[in-house]
Amino acid sequence: MEKTLVFTHRLDLALRLIDTTSGRNVRNPAIKIDGTPVRFGAKEDGVLVFQNLGKQRFRVTASAPGFEDTEADVNLDALNRAYPLLELHMLPGDGEEFLTLSGKLPGIAALSAVRMGDNACLMREFDARKRLAKLFNPHRLALDRLHYALVDPDRGVFESFQIVHCTDDQTVKTDRVLEMPFRNYFPVSPMVLGRTAPDGSYCLRVRDEGEKAMWYVRWETDGEEHFQTIDFRVSPRLEEG
Image (tube, rainbow, N blue to C red):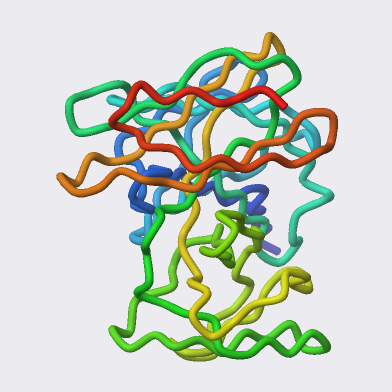
């Protein structure tokens, strides 16, 4: 009787690298796991596919031309087993097309921002039980990013959330119950994520689109959140406290 050998390839990790300033996929990346370069397959939608890694916990390092390296600790047991997708935001390197907020602030963490005056998509209703947000999206924007925020333009603050699923271009399911009270003119805007380090250094970049460069910036120190309205054209720096 002839023997047949069967080889199986298990999907361990699906990785998407995102330009945090635009939401677009990062091209030509190189990946290291625990410091060792690894090969991967690439899908048409920009997702990098890793198979048979042989470990459940590791540190992944991503690099790409024109971007700063980014690192993350990964626990595969914490990802969806059916489709273990991890999305990492990468910070572009400094250049003429970007405006930069950088400096040092002891204990800083979770740095992010949303553009002031972005009214293209507005919150209309939120069903807390179902975590469904009804939006006014007249231009039918593709809500294809992961990180968004409900923005209170009256106070210059925002509450972050992730989109789990889009029912249509007017209805999305969120990863959490939104707690911030809102009015029907409160925007839903994509977030730009910054980088922080244990020594207190921070960096956040946004694209210079030739218009006003006013942004609402959020960060944390000792678990407490802070907000500041920043003009990226005027030597920006975060205020302590």
